[in-house]
Length: 443
Image 1: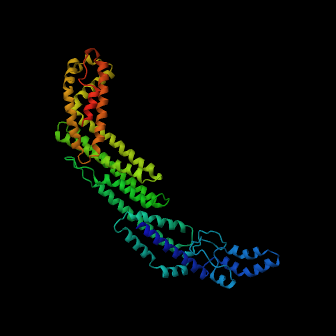
Image 2: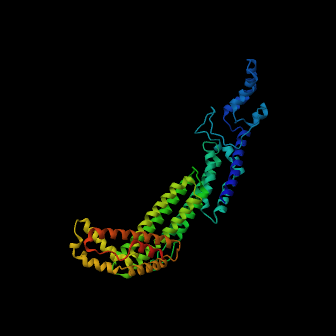
Image 3: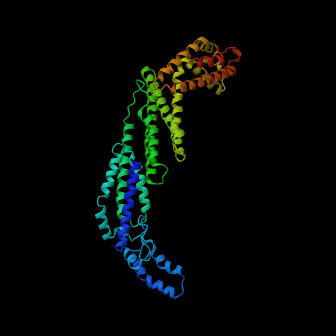
């Protein structure tokens, strides 16, 4: 629709400009200095010849004064070169042939009356084209702004007052139409309902936003017109709503879980919220990355990277919260014990001299995380992760790799703390790092 509108508008603009220029020439609606110069033309040329000027001076003298604003009357009477360039908007000129901010021949009453007679329904016709192009896809309005703005730019500073009025009217209508469309998208995002009692997979806006950007960019492109600023504003508004919505869900889920620390349902809803957020952020970032590698133009890459950075920042925050949830079963007590040991060492205290960190307590923790228990816990954790992300299977290996890296990192930290604080006890973990890697890869 946008391409068809651009072609149709180009033809209409060309006809209006040509007709106004022809009318202005035909009925002498040009600065008086042009007509006087034309009427002095033959005498001036004769005088120049008597003074010994060359042929080039004879032929170019009057024409140089007249430029492209020769009237039809002078063309016929004095056989001056044919009028041309009717399709090019002419600048506003005063009687001294200089650009004027006050003289506007498109506003001359007679010219305007004739243009109204010829193109009285032009505004209606342009409105009809807009309606046809946006009936099934209002987003086309921002694409139609590009040829409108291009035509206005061409007419800037010219005497095409009639045409400028029509174009500005259409420009205002298209801008309002696109803003309404963006507002509808915003309301749809705001109306999104999150159900954390069960896992529902990715939400529509996570899948649509990358496609929305790709679609609008295909319409607007790298133009310096108002459509570019309007599109950027739309991206900013929609992206801000999406990220605010996701961050609000994370905050509310965590706040609810903290207020109801002993409520299993609240803890489950928090976990479901983390899963929902990870799925939506994965789908969103995957879509943005796909557009960046396949269709994004270089000028838009910095903007796209801003959205990716924001999404990745939220994703890292949610991933940490999710890992804390799911690692509670296989390694929660072990991690918690050595977190306390780490704080004790940081305070320059001896863990062995602390009642809840003594040798007997350490032995109990290590026995609870024996080789057989850890292998079984990891197997159950793998099944749990698959169940969590059954709606987005592409995310399962990504999350599992993150879990594996975190468990191996915790293993190294625990081994280091054992060597620092409990070397004299000769106690150690019942499994090695190689064992842990093998169990994690068995899923």
